[in-house]
Amino acid sequence: MSFTAVRNIVGATALLAASFSSQASLIVNGDFEMNPVNPGNWAVFNSNHVAGWQGSNIEIWNAMNGVLAVSGDNFIELNAHGANSGKWYIFQDFATEIGKAYQLSFFYRARNNNERFDISVAGLSQTLSDHNNLGWTLFSSVFVATDSLSRLGFTSQNASTTGNFIDNVQVSALPSPAVAVPEPVSLAAFGLGLLALVGGRRLGRNK
Image (cartoon, rainbow, N blue to C red; front, side, top):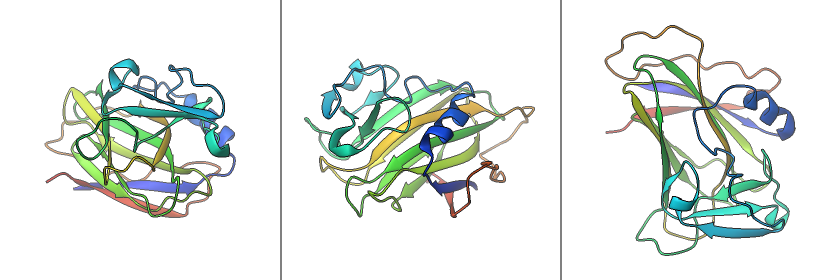
């Protein structure tokens, strides 16, 4: 099974950030603002020192190389620096209700071209390779929880130390009654208001 994800090229990022921040997110520190970084700089943190997140080192940028965050001042570069034995992987576990629908959204952008990473949540996954270094792209989709604790993860496609900016990660419960489901189900993509639809993605269940 799969679910539909909507991609949009973002111009008015401030407006978008405001619209999503009006919903209560289940993700802790989804905009990576809890670790101060001086403007025009970047810093690497052990994931144990970044609230909410676990996994590999986390490299946080603040307006480095003229790239501005979507939300607040900070964003991350998934392909971080520091000791790492393979692909870069960060994740966060959050409480969910089995059978209930949730909205996942985040922004992503390439540092250079030809960058790729995997997004996974609730047993579904998708490789994203369409981003560029000209602006942020919005990923937004709906999934149905199959456990009382769900995991959201981001995994790089290689072990290099450059690439894959991510910001403003949010998961919000949708106002629909919970239903019993044996596995992830397909849901129609939800509207994004002022944004013009430019494409779609499907996330497939992990094998």
